Amino acid sequence: MGSVRVLVVDEDRDVVDLAQSFLEREEPTLEVETATSASAALDRVERSSVDVVVSDFQMPEMDGLELADAVHERAPDLPYVLYTARHRSSLEDAVGDRVAGYVQKGTGREQYAELASLIDEVT
Image (tube, rainbow, N blue to C red; front, top):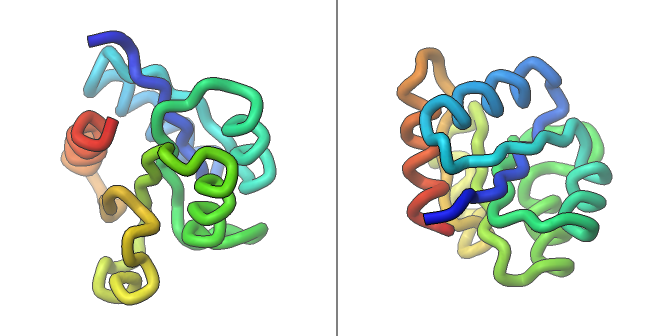
């Protein structure tokens, strides 16, 4: 299998840097790029090859589901994964089929193993 280009979106620079580092360490085939705003993420989706978008839910410019809709307008078949501290139960009704999967942020490396596995599953 070749490399998988992942775009991680979160307004917190530390979060995207950690996610990039741990995901690339967890799965060497992942090439992780980051964006700290929805507009930067949409620009990347439009201008570069991305295989999957991984995004936080709560962001200042638009929330993760609004971003999912905007991504799918530009690239309808691009898998979109929510990676957020919010509990799944608080999002289930709104999510529907807008996202390919969901991983809850936590502490420790397990969340990155789960996220890498989900990325592999949806790409």
